[in-house]
Image 1 (cartoon, rainbow, N blue to C red):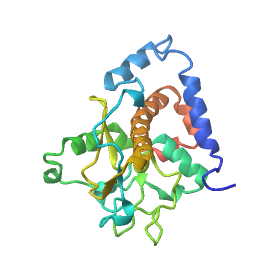
Image 2 (spheres, rainbow, N blue to C red):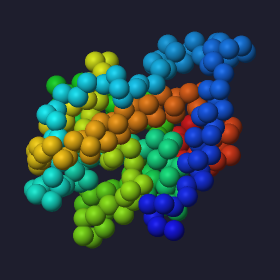
Image 3 (cartoon, rainbow, N blue to C red):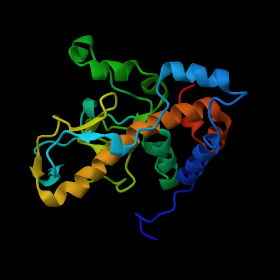
Image 4 (cartoon, one colour):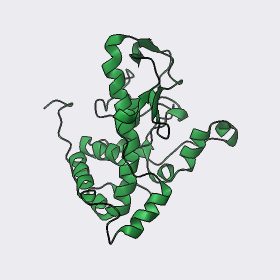
Amino acid sequence: MTRAAARLPTVEALAALWREVTARPLWQRPDLGRYLRLRRTMRLELLDVRQVRLLAPRGKINDCSACTDLCCIGRRSTVLLRLRDLATLIDLGRTELVTHDKPTFAPEEQQDRPALRRHLASEAWRRFPVLRQTTLGACAALSLAGQCTLYPHWPLSCARFPYALHADRREAFYSPRCDSFWIRPDAEPRARAMVAAAVDSYNERIKDAVLLAYAEARLAELGLMQLLRP
């Protein structure tokens, strides 16, 4: 079996758990109080990619082969992992990449960067681990040749970069952090796939919050809770 076709039982079990938890309305008794508490903290409706407007030119896609930088290196490139990412790493036998050793950002570094401030202040940043980086600041999943050893099962944040999502506006855009790109009609399917990955990444945040609120014991059975902070 090829790596791309590898079976991921923990990922499959996590998806089955989501279907089970959402098989009935989250607000249905006896869970109304739990639902209202969760609803006060975040939106609980999953986003449909068909509702998202793409701001980037059609077919704009990153050209890694011509890049003079590497998006997998540096504090700003720290990858916050989701439950699905953790389930994948369990299935791949790569949990040595999971760490709670996170970079710090001085107040002046956060100035004029509201998205970074919100990210660092979030419950997800407190509880969820990140991909380990080497002492040189490179992602530990990189090979010596600079290739991702997790691909195609890399984390959601990696799969969508450099596309990002403004959920409130229902807009997807090409991140200014990546200035190595081409614009070609035949790249449109790949660009659309990365927009879909950006939407998936947003939706997984919602799924994580719901599953942690409704099925923590089951997540522990899957070995996921031991990778999170209490």
